[in-house]
Length: 212
Image (cartoon, rainbow, N blue to C red):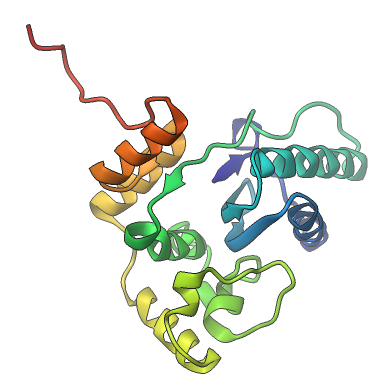
């Protein structure tokens, strides 16, 4: 999922802002039973990869977190009004095909933005936890991440290997499209399964005029 600042405005102006948001994210993730697997806090937006443990858990987490942080931010900078660009955007992910790709997509965000040369150079992401073994109460490893190795050092080494290549081309377009449009990120079978479970159309429609 992604949440942006209103009109792409700055949401984190100093290190204290990042730290406050991360602390509240941990608190509300625990409260609403949401496992956070990967994240990056950019200056004007946030990316999260998470698994809810209950219905509407992510929405409740983000609503509470958003209100708490906006109060803090407005008080700190003597401002009023909205901070976020409406509701967060998200997509449902097919784990076996895309989950580890999303780990990479999220943690490479500062590199794509030209802020750092390596993901390890950016402090406010989950890369130091997933790739380098830094401990964090915020991070819950996903089973597919744990399957990368039997021991932590082996797991972290195999994880770092995934970052030899950037997320680009069609994969990058598919991730962005699915997230921004609230679609499914997965193959046709997975799309059909999700639509059957939810009772609503969430796969992208073909472009162009209907035939006939």
